[in-house]
Structures are given as C-alpha cells and as structure tokens.
Image 1 (tube, rainbow, N blue to C red):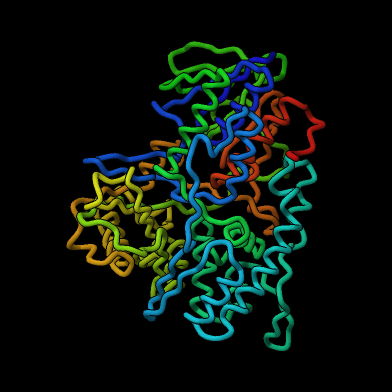
Image 2 (image 1 turned 30 degrees about the vertical axis):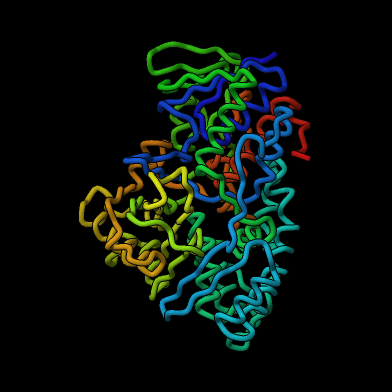
Length: 501
C-alpha cells in the first residue's frame, strides 16, 4: 500500500483519489479552500440555488465508469441524470431561431431546414459526419491514453477531413473552426451555432484547429445531460464515493512545496509548516502554481508547453433570481448570438484595444424545484466567454458586461426586467478565488502544432503526477474524469499502462 498525497479537491483529483483508494492505497487530499469540487460550485441565497461552474454534462459514461470501478453502487443510484431536450435553443440577431433536438441527427437536420431554410440541415448533417471521422481518429490517443513522449503525432496532420475549397485559383482546406464555418456551412447562423460550441469551452474560433469539430459532435453523439439538483450534486456524489473508499480530506490546507527525496517526489509541505510524507504526489493545480511548488523543471525541452503565449479566455456569469415560474415549454438552454460576432472575436483577441463587444450569451433555465424557493420563482444563469485580460477590477467593465448579458437574455426569458428580484455578478476573480486560476481550461485538441494539448500526466520528477483540467486531456467535466482514470492507471500499473479500456 502506497501513501498518496493529492493537491486540490477538483473533479479530476477526486476521480483519481477514489480509484487509487479502491486499489488499496492510502490517499489524503489537501484542499486550500473549505470545500470540494474545484470550479463545480453552488451559490445560494434567499432559497435560490445556482451552479456557478458547468451547468450541463456531456459524456456521462466517464462518471458511470468511475462509479462502476469504485463500487457496486452505480452513478444513477447517487444522482438523477436527465437528458435535456431540446438540447439548445439558438436565437439569432435577424429574429430567427431554432430548437435543436438532443442526440438526433435526423431531428437536427429537419429542425435546421425548417427554421433556417432548405439545405441548412443537410450542410450541418454532412459536417457532423466529418466531425465523427475526426472523433474516431483522435479519441483513443487524445482522451483514453497517457500523453506519450511522441505526442507530436497529435500535432501533425489535421484529423478533420475538410472539404476542398477553391479560392483565387487555389484549392484550400479548412484549418480552423472558423474556416469550417465560412467554407462548409455557408450560413451565418450555422456558423454561429458552430462557434458557440468553441466559445462554450473557452476556445477562440479563429484559432481553434478544425479538429475542434469533435466538440459539437460529442454533444450530438452522446447527448446533453442535467443532474437533478444541479451539477454540484455530481461533485457531491464523487466526494461521497471518495469518503466511502476511505479517502481522507483536509480542507483549509494550502500546499506550499512538493518535497523531494532521492530524486523523486516524497510528500508535501503545508502553509502551517507541517509535512506530509508520501510515495506519490498528484497535483490538480494550474501549471504556473505547480512550478512554484517544485524545485526543478517538470518537462523536457520541446514537450507540450503549459503556458501558451496569451491568457486563455475566461467566463463572466450573472445569477438571476426571478419572480414568476418558468413558462411551459421553455428551453433549458438558450444561446443568444450577437449581431457582430467578428467584433466579439476581435475583442477576445486584443482586449486592450477596442471597447468590449456584446458576446455570445448562454442562458440556462433548469426549472429545477431544488434551485428555487417555490413554483412562483425561477433561478437563471447567464454566462459568456470573455477575455481574462479585460479590466475586471473596474466597475465600468463589470457594468458593461452585466448590461450585455441582461439585454441578450431578454430574448430568451419573457418579461426578464420586470421579473428580476436581484442578480449576483461573478467575474474571473471569483473563478480565481475558487480554483487558483482566473482562466478556464479548454479540452485538449489535436493538430494546431500541439498548441492545444495540455501537459502530460507524468512529469520529469518521478512520483509527481498532474491531474485535472490543466493537464492531459484538458478541461471540461468528462475530460477531468478521464484524467483521473489516467493518473490512477499510471500509478497502479506503472509506466507500462497503455490507457483506459
């Protein structure tokens, strides 16, 4: 039995801890805040409840597998999973809108043809077929295997089979998600739907590789799910599974150093000066923080870089307490598209330049009795991807984005202004307080010269492992769960571990 110290109680860390405990190891989790879940938090006030991190779940099979592998009680015995249908309502600046069915290619094609005109559904359906090919080519090395030293295979040929496009006597193929939209979808509204999937993960559409097509494909193929009571209930279930497997949690415990002995990780030192010895250390923290905890470089020259040039986008969120219940037939998720999406992209690329632009806004209306005082009220979450480098310490910036989100949400929530009791603002500073980073990690993607991969789960310091959204295979609830499975496999089976089955 090995002693394992885990830094942080995020979803990836807890997924690894539960698996390691079942394998017979003694696992202690050190969390600097007073609760578990990382970015998966809940805000409560006056009988209203809100998910402040992810609001929906894709690939629930990742957490079903976690519960199967760590005990006889399946996930569905611990939480209630509800398939969200329609998957999303999209509202466009020209006044058109479309409701997209959940996990139904034929239904989506039909809905797009009816709402956006004949041919729109066919182009989107053909795109999903190509996206599936990219998914099939990358799923195993990108999501189910550790990031091996020959990771360059994921940075080479673009796995998305782009359609040849003739332009100025040249034949070109889409290399970015934005180019897929321009050349293959050929409709501003279809482009908006595609770009919204990238923005939801904190990815910039003009720079995200074409392989980002796997993101909308994941939703299409595996469905969009809600956890009754809020996604925080999923974090609670994983935490309780850890406790059942005798994982120990120490809250309010900030790790200040990873200890070394004989050239390998040997434990952690805490802010109060105490030391906890360990045979392995698993870190669920931002790469910049992890570097301050160690005394040596963690990657070889030429490995995947943990700090790409610009800070990745982050999220701005409004939590709304409304009087009056949700109207019958209201969509759980509405995406409100801006009139000038290119301006939004430009501002994300250079936030120090022009004035902030109205962003793409996601409106979540779960209609969950657990998140409201009674049937005569409703809790709503508005969110947008924004630049982490904007002036979030200035009241003017916060007010500007508050106005943007409220104005956009009026097209999704009838009588919003009149119904609004109060709202709570959550800026990137709140994200940083809870997770240690003001940015939100995106899922790992192939191609793009490796710029969209995350650091490997192993490091140059033997015995030190990385887990969670800032490590392979990247951010998002399912990816965090996958990272936990990979780290547990590397520790239990050693360097011969070839990936989850």
